[in-house]
Image (cartoon, rainbow, N blue to C red; front, side):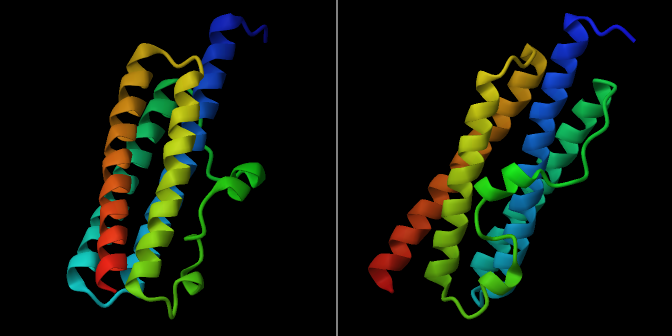
Length: 157
């Protein structure tokens, strides 16, 4: 089949969205692991809410990939895995104090922000760009909140 420029753009958009989906899934898994590793119920609830948010972001992006008549990828890109934060394995958080868990989450959010910013330099159609920009704004809010918590824990820890 002869693929025209529009088909290439659709494939490029789907690839960009698939990378964001994986970033969201990683965030979801990381926040769930963080929630399970802390004693403080408020902190646990916060991490669980961020995990739920990332699951919703991934689902929204998966719908958009399907709308482009592409399949959302279910596998991890090896190169992308090297660029993600260290919250993929629950064992990484076992035995760490809450300040360290918050710091790990904040560092992982740094990576998510970078991935989202990189996606915005790609040639996304305006409807997709709006979704990605909105999600990025919410991820940056989570990042800033985690950074504030990290500083607060450092002062009082």
